[in-house]
Every structure is written in structure tokens, then in C-alpha cells.
Length: 218
Image 1 (cartoon, rainbow, N blue to C red):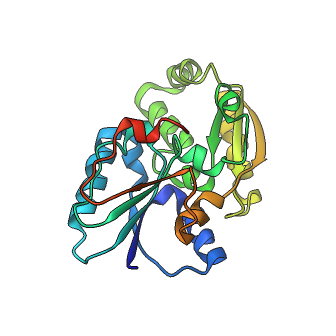
Image 2 (spheres, rainbow, N blue to C red; image 1 turned 90 degrees about the vertical axis):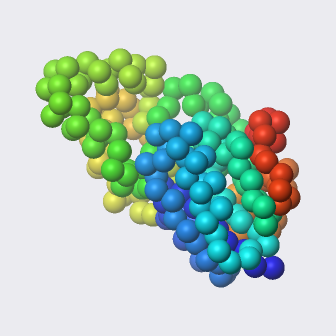
């Protein structure tokens, strides 16, 4: 069985740990984390990558959640698409939380991958400061994040939390959010790699397009 993994670089630490833990050998194509800004751009980029695969693969594994419905409308004419059936990457690394929907209502989430992004919260804030000035930038961010109460650094086990805690605290202070650290899980990524595809995975046969109903039961 010839397989290719197409993964968001936001999850690079988690994917690399899952590969190490499972002992899998698989070719990887990393996709830019900036694509998360637009589900349409994400969908287009993924489809272009799927179409651009020159070798014949039996399965294309996508290390993604259905971020903003960005994975709707995907199709491979040659290979099966294997897709984790999660709302987004947060659901992918917090699948161990039974009360995740409630946590989402008050919490903004971070991992090392999000903190490294060119559009991390602190990088975007500095961009607004340069564009609008400190006072107006702070007002904008207070409006954007006023519904949040907590800033969670997810300990996925794929990186040293202490290396990113200070930066997280700085962002928390900037947004007036309480910083918390909570345990995540890379089990879904490990299952994606090992073929242990339970009800939390989609197996889309070649020629079939992903549709909304595929993702209804997160």
C-alpha cells in the first residue's frame, strides 16, 4: 500500500512525534499554515496538491480537521482520501476532552505550531500597532477577543511547554486572558498513520467528492 501524508505545518511537532511513536515511514508534503485564513484558499491549495501528485498512491492521508469547511469539495481521481473527522485542528489535538464544546466558548487555543506562525497573535498585534498605533490596536483586540476568558497552551507532548509558556503569558497579558496549560493528545494523528480508522475518520474512495454530510457527526 503506497501512501502520502499531506499535513498542515501547524501540526508539524505533533505529526513528527506521531511518526516517531508509531514507527511509520511515510512521505510528507507540508502545507502552509497561512492557508487557515481562508477556507476557500485552503480547499484550493489542497486540491491543487492532490492533483499535482505525480506518483501513483493508493491512499492520501490528510493531517487536517475540517477547518472552516475547508476540506469540503476535495476529490482524488486515483487514490483514497483518509481524513480525520474533526471540526478543526483544535478538535484533533483535544479529542480527549469530552466538554470541548463548552471549553471553546471561553477559550483561545495555542500550541507551538500556532505560536511559530507568521500570523501568531503577538505578530498580528504588532502589525496592528504599527498600522494603527498602540491605543487603537489594543481597542481592536479587546473587541475581537472580549468573549474569551482563557488562553490555553495545549500540551500535546510534542514540545516542551516551558519553552513557550513565557510567550503565552505575554499574549495573555496583552489580551487580558487567564493563561492555562492543559493536556492534549496526538492519538488521532497516530491512528491516521497506522490505519486504525474508527468512526472518527473518513475513507473517501477515488472519484468521490467530500460533502458536508461526511463531517456532520464530530
